[in-house]
Length: 334
Image (cartoon, rainbow, N blue to C red; front, side):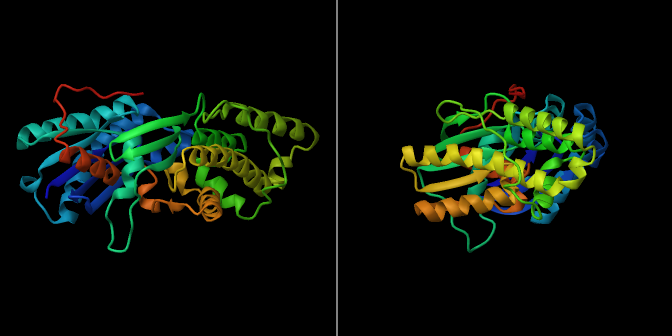
């Protein structure tokens, strides 16, 4: 029954968690507000903030779990993908601590960790997916349809060929001069808007792949044309615009996902990643599940965005396989 200390520093959240087997004991996240004024993550500022946060975050995670460093059996860390400077902070800290404690390292792929968040035991009432399972991974930097045959046996059926879904949403928000991060703002404003007020075309991409660059560009040109006739167009129709662009992107995501699930005869479906916090996506997937009699798994909000608990559960399954990392492994960005 191992104790796993997990570290996540792939982007702009410094996080540490402690798991006892697959049960979560603590999960601490230090977010960075400094990027809001720039409308996006500034890599140099992110890495500096990680250096300031990593020690107190790990210390708090251990304290909240009511254990000491000497009880830790292994250290799981995000190796990539992510921002190189940010990853270096977490990777270097994990390596140093493993050397000092003489315990093994476990490298974790950030995207796999998002998917495996569904297997974190955080209360006594939850159920976990069975295999095979299909997951729609959607975040600011990644969009993939992933078929899971086992915890560590994943097959990518489709992915974006340009922008990710979350990136497209954030860019739409920026076009409308909404605060960063744009996803939660659009989701909130869309609650009072009409999702059928405006219609935007979606690209015809083969198989289960996605493209969001065209949606973003068509939205930009649409607003440009409208603003020429009415400079107050965005302000007058902000809620409807948010609801319409959100519906366009989320329906496009789910149309491919539904097609993939039906083709592969999958009954266990899930979403993961930062965009899985979107209310339209969550509600629409539940409706799809009712339509096709699927078991639907939607992550708690605390496990949607970047967090170390998901790194810890991925590390736990690799620990069971004795899949340990060499200290010479560098981080990777893609």
